[in-house]
Amino acid sequence: MKLYGFGPTRSLRAQWALRELGAEFEFIPVNLAAGEGQTPEFLRLNPAGKLPVLVDGDLILTESAAIVFYLAEKYPGHGLLPSDLETRAQVYRWALFAMTELEQPLWRMARHTFLYPKTSACPPTSTWPAGISATWQPSSSATWKAAPTSSATPSPPPTA
Ligand SMILES: N[C@@H](CCC(=O)N[C@@H](CS)C(=O)NCC(=O)O)C(=O)O
Image 1 (cartoon, rainbow, N blue to C red):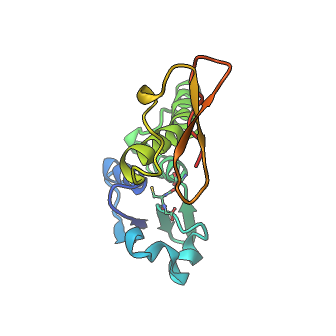
Image 2: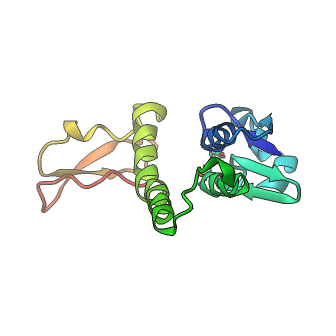
Image 3: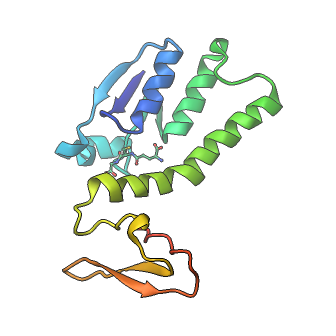
């Protein structure tokens, strides 16, 4: 089994599961920062150019949650997934909640807080005057402009 991953990315989820299950695997680093996620060889594994990718025989599996569920079922003796259907449903519920409800807003906040240059990051909402929302100005100056809203609650930042 091979896991393609890199540093502190979502590939950690798959690594964590593999180690938790005591599975033997080869870790293949794909340096995203060096563009290795866009090489023709890697794109053959995942046309989206994203990590993690698990290769198990003929199976090529992307999506960190799918990989974790696959591994949990491949090694059932470790009890990573409950055998009782109703309890297992709760596992799916929380995993999907984390991926569909939590992950994107948290990642967006992280990008605007730690990654984007200050000139283009959304300023912290704590600095917004009451009754004001921020609107993205896609100009070369890339600044934030205060715009009045009908509500006293600031609108969420843009989805960029
Ligand atoms: N929903 C996917 C997201 C995969 C993903 O976005 N991986 C990032 C690293 S955390 C990546 O490879 N990004 C490379 C890129 O966007 O070019 C999963 O959970 O596996």
